[in-house]
Image 1 (spheres, rainbow, N blue to C red):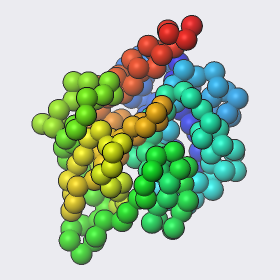
Image 2 (image 1 turned 45 degrees about the vertical axis):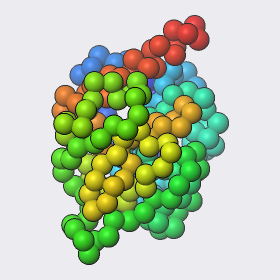
Image 3 (image 1 turned 30 degrees about the vertical axis):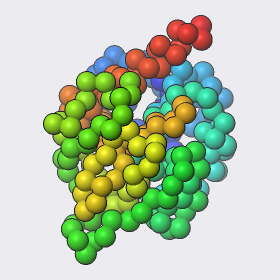
Length: 203
């Protein structure tokens, strides 16, 4: 069972619909006691980093996320909030992955980065099973995570940036898999498969 974190910056309906299409059992909640019942967590997000963190703190979801050992998949802003900080509003974020989110240089191209782009897997990982650099995914973001040792796949817009990241039980994707057609569905299925495997091991 997958738990989707509900907060003001969550893009809940499209993520839930994507999981419904896969037949993946899930629920949506902002109650960390309910999230404890899930085998894996999806942490979606759109909007402003500072406002999103304020909302997470108001529900104690920031503390819960920092302490959970469940597999967590952050999407777009949800991925960005896994890092230490963001230039967006000089926000301190969750600090689960080292690094600071940077703003794209609008003097070099249109910002935000919006539309279909490729990602180049750098490291084999179950989340990226069956996904290649020939496939296109849907992006909408004005800030980016620099390339680091936790980068699983990169993308280029103005400069190279992290498209997929993983550290310990935390994973994140900068693109929107729920809006990325078959390849996005494959990534969500990969996450569901990882969650089910972990659940079976722990049962």
